[in-house]
Length: 202
Image (tube, rainbow, N blue to C red; front, top):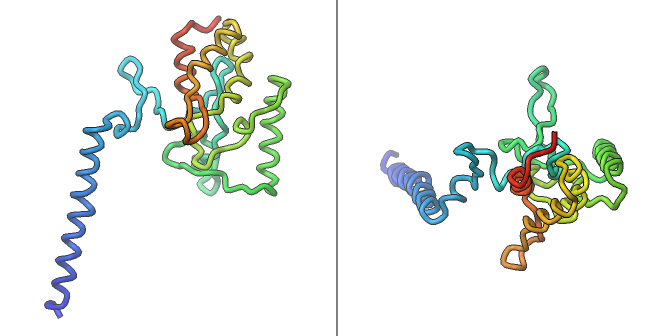
């Protein structure tokens, strides 16, 4: 019986070494060599401190900052292990809400977010400001979603609306290779650009 098992065991060990160790290390090494920034997580560093990633959104809530899309990521309630609580942009819990169009919870959340945005500005609301992405971690918003927030951010920072709008236009990225995806604005990059532009008013 050992004679029959030996080829299978040898093949298992060989494939484990090749596909489980050698291949991952080789690809990781190659990626680090050719694309060091991306292979390290596309981290954003400021004053030698990591302040975020180009690939993962952050939960900006202050009026002086542009806000990203709603995030559906959750975590276990520390006070009750049987419940889940909202923890926006939790990178190790990437997920959508899995709520369908007939879900009352989804309807109520979208209505609440819409009312909040309507109170901020009486204008058509870009859909990405009230809908979550499939990952819950989307770092980008549409140019329309950014422009919707310009007046609030400008007022909070004591800056002319034109100055903030110019930053939005400057930070708007085109489609990849001109054809893939849509135009978008990285929220973290835009907020960092505004922080560097001028201090927020008291």
